[in-house]
Length: 356
Image 1: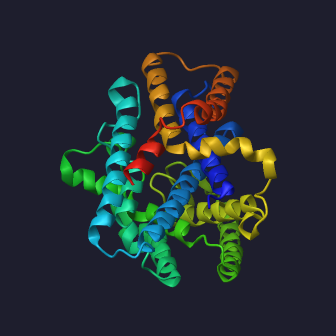
Image 2: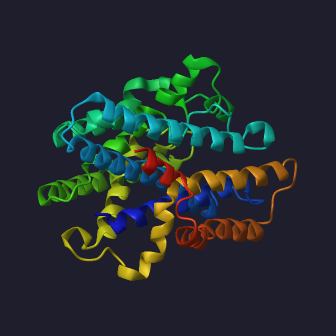
Image 3: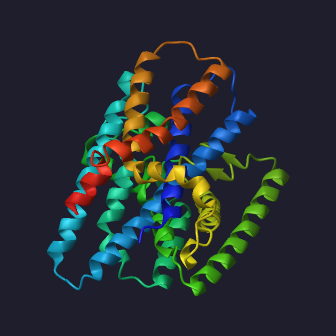
């Protein structure tokens, strides 16, 4: 049975990603990192990727469970499940990189590992995750969460953006994929394991409640420490309690807690046979959730055209940039509804389902 609240979370995640990527391509004039609009945009962006990866982890785990429950322990069914996923996700990553190529006003090198290659890697370990117990998956989540403290400067804390998104040769590409790219396995696979832990049994929900309470206490302490030390609590990159590039342990913990809270809110009573939060009033979000991978690729293609045309152009006024960002974010909702009604078979999601 397809859970509607899962589609709604996917929709929120992908729309948040569209918003923050659009804001990055058309930043308004006169907005500093201290500006409230910049803070709100960064907060949305900081939650978008964790939501996207966590919900992908949920999907990978569920798909792997269905595969394992088929009773066929032969390796070939697993290969037929893994290879198409890795192939399509990698191709999509190359499309995204090419659309926003740095030499055309974009942000990436064409071979840069990113969030989609992270999901491809997660698909590779899907058959392993499905045979781990909850305690083992929880332990793996914690291990990936604290991995930035373990690997130290290997996470690329001193890298410039141009270095983080470039890779010369296969060795450096693997280094970006695993350690110091935009979404390296260490620590981002923590969200894959978090997704595998979001289950429906009451015992696990009680454990989640305890985890949320403990996490919120740690977050509150970190905020107090930030005020006491007069240190920024959160920055995209730089010296702060939470940083996104590279993602440090405190960022993984904080975003993971808020992702978990969002899951709990949006599920409503659906797991017990009722309706998700908002009932039919939020059903308009669901088509975008079911089309999240296609929207992810398509919005980057459109932004690539914008980035190319805006090279060497002056920044837009704040209201113009704001309106364009909101428009580009919201337009994917009616487009996804139209797509589902008229051309539902034309998407990367449909291609994945057919190959699986």
